Image (cartoon, rainbow, N blue to C red; front, side, top):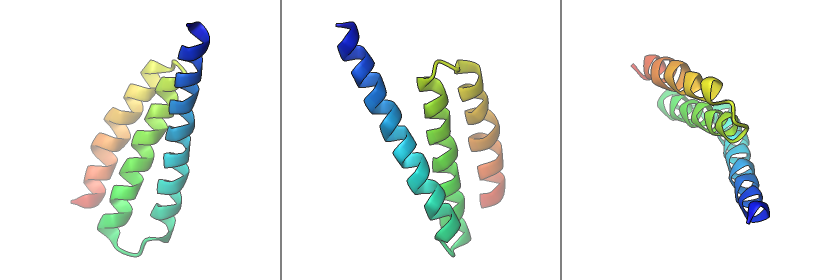
Length: 77
């Protein structure tokens, strides 16, 4: 039972890391500012998911509050 939970957690971490890499590349290559800002917001959110999967709850929630909530919205508006 513990092994299965560990594998599921690992799959989620790998998925979040893949999303982080893809959205980071998209943020660097997109030319439209709004699309780039949305890609950065997705990158920040997936980085928070990676932090949460590593049991760093404070850092993950701070990542969501500060970067996804404030910086990405500031760039869009």
